Amino acid sequence: MPVATAVDQIISEVLARHPRAEQPSKLCAAGDGFAKEDDFTGALACYDRALGIDVVFAPAWFGRADMLTRQNRPSEALGCIQRALDAEPDMAPALVLKGDLLRKRGVRDEALECYERAIEGDPESARAWFSRAALLYDLDRRAEARAALKRFFSLAPAGHPEIVGARMMQAELDGPISAPEPQPAAAAPAPAPAPAPASKKSIRAAKKSQRTADKKSARAAEKKSQRSAAPVAAAAPPPTDDQAVFDEVRVMCLGDRHVEALRKLEPVAQRCQRSAEAWLLRTHILFALQQYDSAISSVEKVLSIDPKDLEAVRLTVQVLVAAKKDQRALEAADRVVKLTPQDPEAHRVRADCLVTLMRQAEAVFAFEKVIALLPDDPAAWVSLGRTLRQLRRPDEARMALTRGISLAEGRSPALVAQANEIMAKLPPR
Image 1 (cartoon, one colour):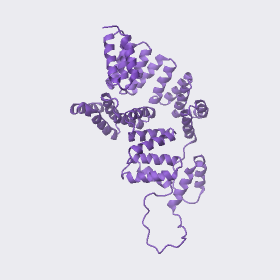
Image 2 (cartoon, rainbow, N blue to C red; image 1 turned 90 degrees about the horizontal axis):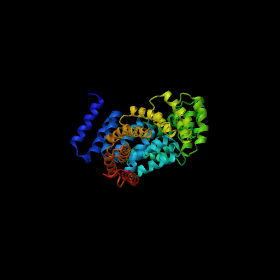
Image 3 (cartoon, rainbow, N blue to C red; image 1 turned 90 degrees about the vertical axis):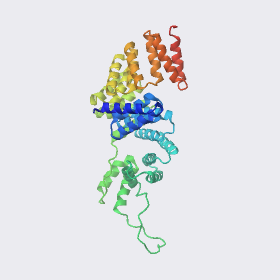
Image 4 (tube, rainbow, N blue to C red; image 1 turned 60 degrees about the vertical axis):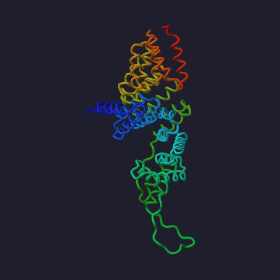
């Protein structure tokens, strides 16, 4: 049976067997099953269908974020996580995932705050304790990292996916944290016993710790360890100079230091012509600086390296819209829809491009596609109503606007006011 057919059948069975109030949770459970099998398409279809029933259902937004993270789509994942946290601010798994994504971007203070909030909401979350330990280790707050790691080991089952990483970190933090092995019986201790000779294992751990204590001297420490006669276990290679530059540039961007960030990045981008990461980061900076023509050239460089880089294609739409290159923006939006046909936001962006080009009849179909995927999204209904009014179809516009108002009441006063303003411009019945 084709995958799409199997997914559709499972969704149909859930909808047939359960009342509407239970359907979002049951669909998420089905999505989790697909996720365990690394079936991203099936999982996303289930989560999207759950959101079509309840657009503020936090577990579905979190499941969607998890899948996007595993597909290396961090910007989209962060957007979904925020939707989950808007609906359920203390959702520990979402807070941990947000912290992990922020940590990768170098936003460590905010990441640590996410982990703290996750632990406050769920003190038994092993993953939150592990992520907290990893970040504290990166910050060289070793005593706190040890304490967090010890808590992780007390909570994590034997098959936890982070066990291996935790053991490696444990070795880096000057030896095991778990209870020491029993020692043979000995006579009464002397007042001041001499320290026992270090074992080879402790020597290796100490050397690893020394190499990672100061990232700026990582390469020098590695060379020194290679010259040492004592056997040393192979350590993970330190970050490359270019990767360190990328991390520093991201931090600059978060502080709105875009001109400085561009100066820092430019030599790397020019030297590494085939680095999609460098050119994509450069595009984000140029977009923020409103240098749209240069941003377009930069993102085209990314797409020449990887034509299916979804983040680059989405960014292309944003830049072209800002540059008022509407036809090209629509073509880019068509590419996004082709890459993610079940993503309602992709259809929404395409619909907005069609409206800008005064192609309202096509925009109606695009907004209807958004509504088919997210039937309880008030913004889509209001946009559809506005477009139908422009097409002089007042009765259909009134129905769409009324639906949008009913969904937005109590949730988005600004959207309600906008819909009422459009409604007032419709001719009387």
